[in-house]
Image (cartoon, rainbow, N blue to C red; front, side, top):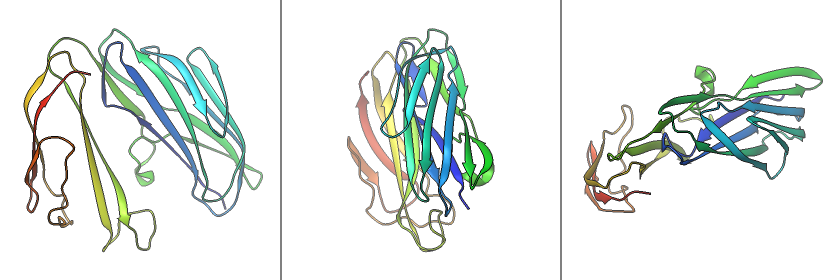
Length: 222
């Protein structure tokens, strides 16, 4: 039958007060049959003021902090995306947010919640973002993985697969960050592909052994 996985990511783990927060919700039919009457709803906490909500495929309605989106059907293997944009408030702290989806699978009503970490097997996690203030340097670091080569079982890391890790480092504070150095141990049960480390800024110091090290230099404010 059909099976829905709803992932909700955010553009940054930390956002300065007054900064832009962008949530991306991806509804994916991971099953073998079509899903129908999909209804997504999300009440964004008041610490983040919603300014817009869009989707290329779903019908989206915004009423204050409440975002709803409807989709008549979603074929097996297909996905639909909803984007919610807001502005971070003046109160520092971590804001957790989670949406919900109802749908029909062969006429049987089903429901699920959005998941942050991309791992369906450990339950559905809310999506956190931390609002920060002040004039000190503040770095936002996000690390994500994808499969460059994928053998059965598909969609999950398995022996022989090649994993691509992408780390994005953003300066979200109020002062320049100097002498920034990135270090990342190679995960257990994986082997580093030699000389596969690249950077968009600075210089790679170590690319053949753990930990991977990159000298990023100076990061300016946004």
